[in-house]
Each structure stands twice: as structure tokens, then as C-alpha cells.
Amino acid sequence: MKDMNMEENKVAVSKEQRVYADWLHVGMLIGLITLIVCFAIYLSGLFPPSIPLAEISDYWCLPLAEYLEQTGYEAGWSWTKMLPQGDYLTFVAVVILAGISIICYMRILPVFVSKRNKPYAIIAILEIILLILAASGILTTGH
Image (cartoon, rainbow, N blue to C red; front, side, top):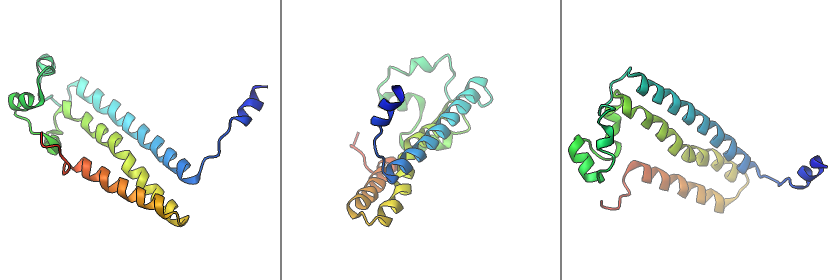
């Protein structure tokens, strides 16, 4: 009885949906594994943190501007200069997890083009451009 209900509930999935989902799944796994490895490295003390673990809670309640001022950090992509420090290693995983959507859109774009699906191809191109601009820091709110 259960198998019949499962058969009835199946939904047709397009090729681009399947491709996007497969790439998203792989990207999520890579990001998750990277996050676990980087966090383990941070906890191990192999790379010293920029802020000692005992002091980090002192900064959590601060507004961003005050946090940046007190730590001497810069906003945006400046964290890439701090990668040798243990507390910044996990940012690599965050970038992977945040960027996987861009890669997924890039991967399904040829599927839309091969199907001659211009509206979705245009939407995918616009998504790619917008996500890259947002990630680059070019689009800001002025804060």
C-alpha cells in the first residue's frame, strides 16, 4: 500500500531542476566538509586566532562599526588577508556555501540554451550577474 502512494506522489522534475539540485547537493557537501575541517583546525589551535577564544565574547554585542574599530579589522573581502588565522578559516566554507548558487546557475544555463528557453536563460544570466555583484561588494547600502 505504501509503495502505491509513493508512486502516486511522484512529481515530474525537469532536467535543469535535477542538474541544479545535484550540483547544489555536491556543493553543500563540499562546503559542509570544509566547514567541519576548518572548524577542527581552529579548535586545535594549529593556527592561532586573531582574537583569543577567551576574549571573543567581548566583541559579540558590539555594533559592526565599533567591532571593526576595536579589532582593527576591515569590512568586505579583507578577511582573505587574515586566512592564516584560525578564526578566519571557516570563512572559506562560508564562501563555498554562499557561492554554490552561482555555480549551479552557471551549470544550468547551457541546459536552458540547448532547450532554446530564452526567458529562463536570461533569468539565469541575470541571477549570475546579480549574485556576483552582491558577493563582490560592489552593491552596497552605504552603511
